[in-house]
Image 1 (cartoon, one colour):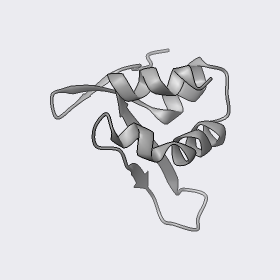
Image 2 (tube, one colour; image 1 turned 90 degrees about the vertical axis):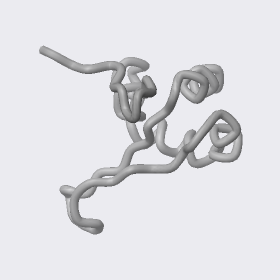
Image 3 (tube, one colour; image 1 turned 90 degrees about the horizontal axis):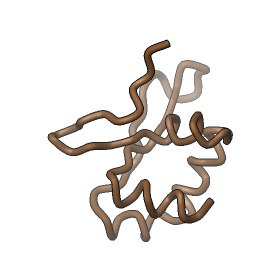
Length: 79
């Protein structure tokens, strides 16, 4: 299985909330909830908003966050 842990987006290393969930053995929704609760803290370390794909209100609709290194480090501190 080939699974990218880190992605380079606009020349910056990022990790997605679903990747954090997978490798910390948590549900993605739990990671999303943590991101929402701490959004102002995450914004101190750079741009922080959610991404989405699919049609809202359908099972194909997915949301996720892309965290830079500082945001991911802060995120792991909360766990």
